[in-house]
Every structure is written in structure tokens, then in C-alpha cells.
Image 1 (cartoon, one colour):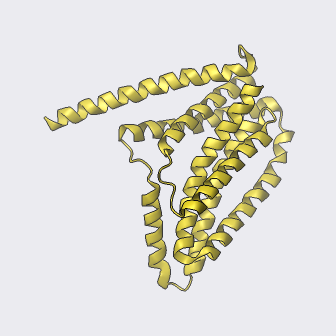
Image 2 (image 1 turned 90 degrees about the horizontal axis):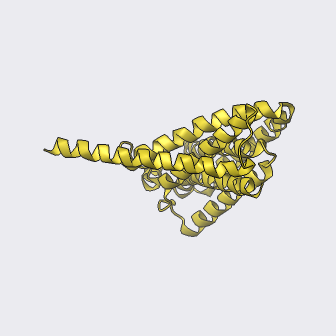
Image 3 (image 1 turned 180 degrees about the vertical axis):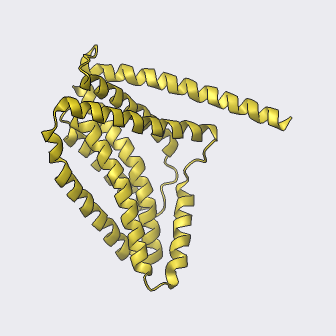
Length: 249
């Protein structure tokens, strides 16, 4: 059980950290361009809406048989985790450009500056903060519910997500700049592995499987996916290097 709690908190923290960093970049751009008021109002309204969604839909999960919840959540986690893994591998290889918080910050700042002459500038800035927090927040809620609900560990997952919010906010307030030094792609690679591992574990339990070693099977599943993903990454790098060398000849 200890291994499950640790992995649940870690998965929620790392996944939420990535999402909160992306939301913070937009909110920071809004605050520095149009002032703190539209940034705080937009982000605050989004948080209130997210809380309302949790309060409304959270209790509904208790009405669904746990086996169904495990299976559905497990499949969704596999899809979600594999998407993160795929993007992380493609970015590491160079097929997709790495996400750059400095560029995202500059682009959002440029957009807000262009809107400066519009009498609705503060409204548009607040809307940008609202959308950023809402969209990233929905992903955080999904991750918290997905990794926590199936074993009654939602509180632990929520604490992991809350810790991520506190850390990002503390760093952001101290630096007053985008957190561009965060190894986001590496985090997404690790989180993708963790979510996929959780997904396979919960899907198996939803189908009635009994994993050898119970919760410790999570570590074995993670190791298998980690080795496979690393092998795929190295093969993709070699293939791309070969293609690049042939193109240069």
C-alpha cells in the first residue's frame, strides 16, 4: 500500500507540476502586461469553476461499481499516458519542437500588447488567464481523480497536485519570470510512463486480474514500460541520425 500511495502522490505532483507551469506562464504574461487585477480575476474565476466541477461530479463516481471505474479509468490513463510518452519521444528526437515557456510567454505578451488599444483589453487579458487555468486545471483534475479514485487515494493525489501548485507559485513569485528551466519534456516522459503503468494496473484489476505482488506490481509494470520506451527512444534517435546523415551526403 505504501508503494501505491507514494506512486500516486508522485504521479499527481509531476503531472500537475507540468500543467501548472504552462498555466502560470500565461497568467504571468497577463499580469505583467495588463496588471495583476485581470490575471487574478481570470485565474480566480477559473479556480472557482474547477472547484464546482469537482463538487458536482466527484460524488457521482461513488455511485459507480469500483470494477467499472477501474476499467474505464485504466483505459483512459493508458491513452492519456501514451499520448504524453509519444510527444516526449518525438520531442526528444527532434520531430516535434520542444515546448519553450519563454517563447510561449513572449507570444502571449505580444498578443496582449497588440490588444492594448482595445477598450476590452483588460477583459481579453482576464479571459486569457481564465482559459489557461481552466484548461490546464481540467487536466489536473482528471489526473487526480484517475490516479486516486480507484483505491480511495484521491486525498493523497490531491495533496500531490496541491504541492505542485504551491511549488510553482512560490518559484514564479520569487523569480517573476517563466519557469523555462524546468525539464518539461523529461517530466512528461516520466509522467507518461507512470500514467500508462497505472492504466495497465487499473485495467487489469477492472477485468478481475490479480497482480503478483499486489500493489508492488506497479513497479514492475513501470520498469517494463520504461525499458521499452527507452529502447524506442534510442532506436528513433539512431534512425533520425541515419536519415539526416544520408540527406547531408
